[in-house]
Image 1 (cartoon, rainbow, N blue to C red):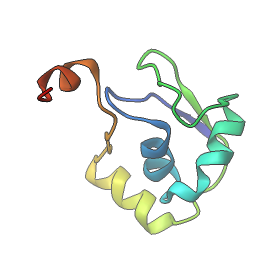
Image 2 (image 1 turned 60 degrees about the vertical axis):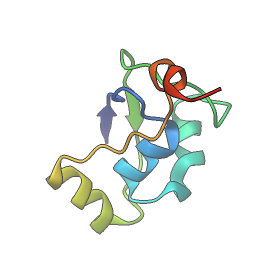
Image 3 (image 1 turned 30 degrees about the vertical axis):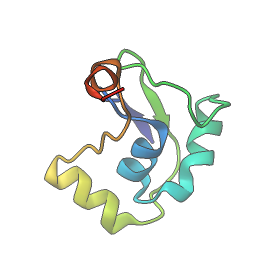
Length: 84
């Protein structure tokens, strides 16, 4: 179907929501991209294969049309801002 390039602070759950409209597709997304851990850090330099149709097409369409890319991962910069 295509590929997508993760944005900064996006994790595998964010990509599943963005591309398939639901996080229920996370394991299929992981399988299609040979990712074996749900906590795997995505690289902004590597494309992910999107090989299946969206499960919740209306939600996936909303994200695409609105240009919204959810990014819920916490990066190094954000961790430094947290109080100890």
